[in-house]
Length: 288
Image: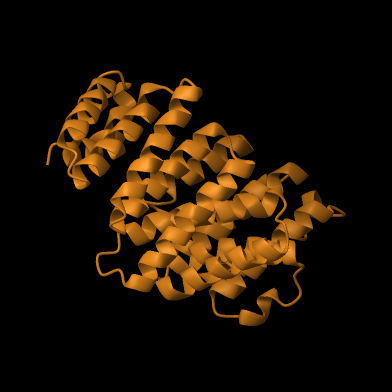
């Protein structure tokens, strides 16, 4: 199996089989043959051992062992990736001093990445605090592309997790909105139109959870505008129309809801068979 296929398979299976994937990773260091392999391998190690398993020490040990690989020898970029990944796991495990030696750019990226691992332990307060601190650093030190991407990914993940929290407190709701807004802000800077469109969808969902229906309608419309401007496929446009319909229903706009729902249903019919499964939740919500 080629390295790229190995990583794709690991990502595809990690959510349902995190222990199996972790064991496979621990036994597969020999697959990291090139400097370009370091980032994707370290990325999934950090994610699986941190966010899914909370096996922080084991993750750190595996990442540290990568330093001895020929692919890392004399490679400042690869060694930097490993240092940030190790710091993220150590910080997530409770070692607050793990960030002390990091420059601001690295610190904000590590805080953002660590928020996901902390979230995996259902420590919502600390996950929000870590992401908020990353945002504060980003205001003081203009984030580079690497840090922007970390802020975007972490904001999306934090917001979506908080949306699902049934007993979410007022402070957690505020943290959810800051995370969704951060995701949109930084995807707009470092992402493609697709990532920006999906960040608009995420923020719409968070606003609905917060009861801010008017703002939710505005961002749903922005989501659709991005789709139109980029000739998005039916799959993407379906979600835009669906979430707009849901927001309109929440605002009491029955005629708007019916029109948006009709467009969403028509778009669903154009979605490929293998993608329709991902639309089931929205379809159910539209007909509730």
